[in-house]
Every structure is written in C-alpha cells, then in structure tokens.
Image (cartoon, rainbow, N blue to C red; front, side):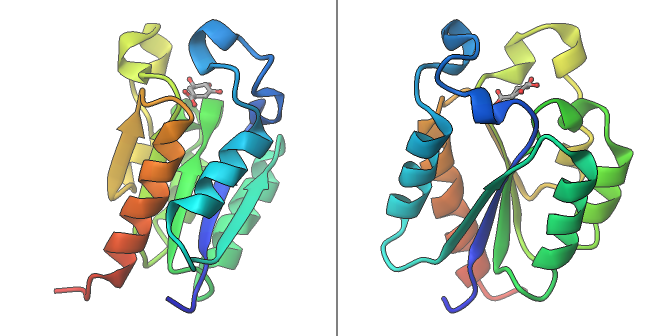
Length: 147
Ligand code: DHK
C-alpha cells in the first residue's frame, strides 16, 4: 500500500502511562506508536496526538486524498464533537475508531460516540493492544476493493 494510515489521537492521550492507569494501563503514547508501526510490516503509519480540537479536524481534512485509512482515538471528543463527525464524514476511506477502555462499561456519558456514526469499525476495551488490531483492520479494509 503506497498511502499511509493516519493514526490520530485526541485529548489527554499524551498523558498515557500515568493517566488513570487502572483504566488506561501503563503503556505510554510512545509505546502505542511503536505498536502501530509494528502492526503491519511495510505499512506507512503517520502517528499524531493533539489536545486541540481544530487541529484534529484539520488532520482529518489533510487525510482526504492522502491517507489510505484513518485510525482515530478521539478520546473525550467522541462524545461531544459534531464538528469532528462532520469532518470524518468527508473522508472517503475506512475509519477505525479505537478506545483503550470499554466505553460501554463506563459512566453513561461515555456510552454514545458521535464518531461511531462515521466509523467503519469500532474497537473498545482491548487496551493499548487495540491499536495494533485497529491498524491491521484499517490496512485490510483499505486493501479491499470497494464493491
Ligand atoms: C479515552 C479517553 O480520553 C476518554 O475520554 C474516553 C478513551 C475513553 C479510551 O478509552 O481510549 O472515554
């Protein structure tokens, strides 16, 4: 695959490793990045994190025509951002939504993700390892010719 997979991370994920380890584990964001880069040999991965919503939206815009697929952990913006949903709806390729924790087993305000309305696949509760599964799924979906 000549086009990269964009792996985009939302707010507070730069604090992985020390942030609520009983929920998010002890893997750091650098560990997560390494998992993504090792997931599919030869696959180009563009890995980013931001605490600024507009920047994440602009990265989704940038992915249009450039990325084969998007893997996204929107973190708290999953449950609040119609702007992010609208941006993702413009992306023509597969979108894999990833959450480290099982959001459906947590507080009610984590149960409805707007991003899931644009996602091809949703992975939640596999921990940091979920990112490797997400990159593999994104690469497989991107390689599957559209019906
Ligand atoms: C990460 C967050 O920051 C939370 O806002 C979400 C998600 C869950 C995660 O599990 O990766 O609720």
